[in-house]
Amino acid sequence: MVTEEGAKTRSKTSRMGLEDVLVKTFEKTEFKDDGSKPALDPADPTFVLDPEFRPKTKHNEFLESQNDQIPVIDLAPLTSNDEEAVRKVIQEIGKAAEEWGFFQVVNHGVPLELIDRLEKEAVAFFTLSLEEKKKICRTFDQPVGYYNAELTKNHRDWKEVLDYLVRGSVVLPDESNTTTLSITNRWPQNPPGLREAAEVYAKSTEQLAYRILELLSQSLGLPAEYFHKYFENHASPVRINYYPVCPIPDLALGVSRHKDPSAFTILVQDEVGGLQVRRSDGEWIGVKPRRGAFVINIGATFQMWSNDRFKSVEHQVVVNENRARLSFPMFFSPASSTDIEPAPELLSESSPARYYPMNYGYFMRKRNDGNFKQYGEDIQIEHFAVNRDSAYKPS
Ligand SMILES: O=C(O)CCC(=O)C(=O)O
Ligand SMILES: [Fe+2]
Image 1 (cartoon, protein in one colour):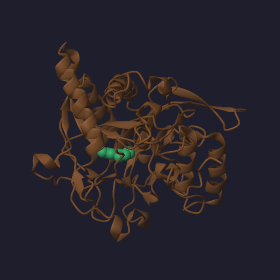
Image 2 (cartoon, rainbow, N blue to C red; image 1 turned 30 degrees about the vertical axis):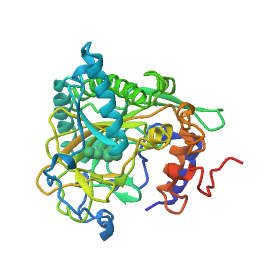
Image 3 (cartoon, rainbow, N blue to C red; image 1 turned 180 degrees about the horizontal axis):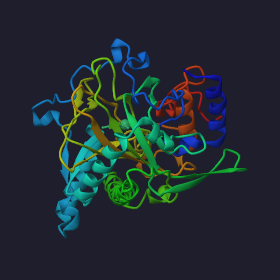
Image 4 (cartoon, helix red, strand yellow; image 1 turned 180 degrees about the vertical axis):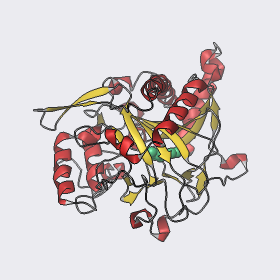
């Protein structure tokens, strides 16, 4: 429900461009200010999805055939001097980004202990009382911290989150560059070790993200550092997702179907399972948990940069009645001032640009507006497609 207050804050949001910071939106529904309630109330009808959006397969159902699994890519050769093996990794990554838009990486250099440590701290945090967690509740002026009322594509998610920025803080200009907004991570007092575990995890994941960025560029035949310049002021968020046990797992989703707007997302999931990817034939394929592996998925930004060679693919999260689930996505995103367009080096007469340039900050703002049904269309990069009769076509 969007209240009058929600409408007010929405326009404030547009003005400030807060969405540039967080990939997902915030403060779209009001908190029930009742610390004694569970963080998610199964009696709340907003969790019940229309039949067409409900999950078709369970969190722990996976197809057996290897051909039905998203590719698993071993990054071990990157630390060797074996150029041929590195070339093979680049090729595999490019192929996975083109065919699936999703892949897993192993031997990636992020120590397993960092993941285990963050999992332990995250469980300690999310099992605190709602009242305690809400002490660092996300607000408009500080869109980082705890939240339990997120919508994805206008559907309520069965999840709690703790959002923070990889680089700790960011100063954002507003649209007219006259005022700035300073956002700084907010950490709970309890558990005392969460902050450090989260910060170390973010730094280590950021290094891996740069490595993946380079490999993706190389697979397109571009220099490894081609896209680095867009990330100098990146404000990529990490999201600690906690999906509590859900008494209505056939009716609700942890995260409804969506595509990420990031360049790509780099995610660790625990052993419970629940992430599902929509294959080109429409089938939802479960991503089998692999201890310590990172799941990488191409976001809208890289699809555009690659002029549709890479695919940004829909995914969703299925919850279950027996076990809570954790996942830690980092949405590796360019600075909000970046204009995204197909890389000119990839274009030719026979392969012209499929998109008009799109400002990343603008894209994020519009995505946010789209989450309020009455305010805006839920835009996708397709709205910037050259052959579409698009409202966003430059005049
Ligand atoms: O929890 C997951 O596995 C995926 C979460 C996700 O897709 C998102 O937060 O955008
Ligand atoms: Fe996602």
